[in-house]
Length: 220
View (tube, rainbow, N blue to C red):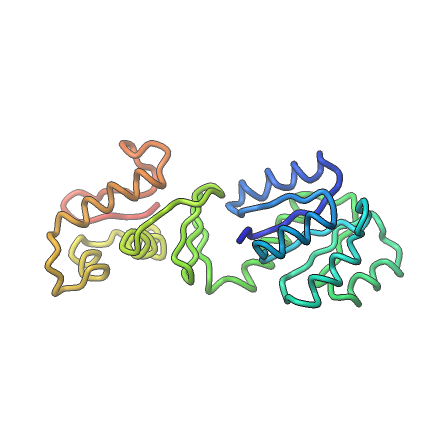
């Protein structure tokens, strides 16, 4: 499931929004028609739609109405139609918010971040270039899905949720594998190595998963 579907027939605007949102660690799909937007949504779903109104073929109002008929996903209309009638129509058929074009990209990003923080705070942990989904136990790094095992996810989550705090090796091992585990203590070191390979730009010179010699590890 993509986090966001951008529905925008202006290729330049659509690409720009996708680029900015991916830098914020969102997974994004782009549709330049209403029909494509519905096809993507019906196949994959989404947590948020940023929806233009003036689309070729099926317009944004129709897309909003159809999606709202089957889903409570958040719909944010971004349109050059700023008259009162258009705004009211969009809200009345089920849009959650309405922002006028031309818009400031930073303001739109802040609005989207606010939506995700309010609606999905318990479900997702976003830190640096990482996004951890605590429900599906999935990880994205710089907007790209990265495969992790259950233990890798648990270990990374523990480190991220205690960002800036040095966690002792015994604590990490017992928290993830259990104090009665038959796994070797070296298992922790191996999993740290794997996580660095999957999340760090240079695993040999990690910027985030830091070794505190003689003690444990810290996430920065």
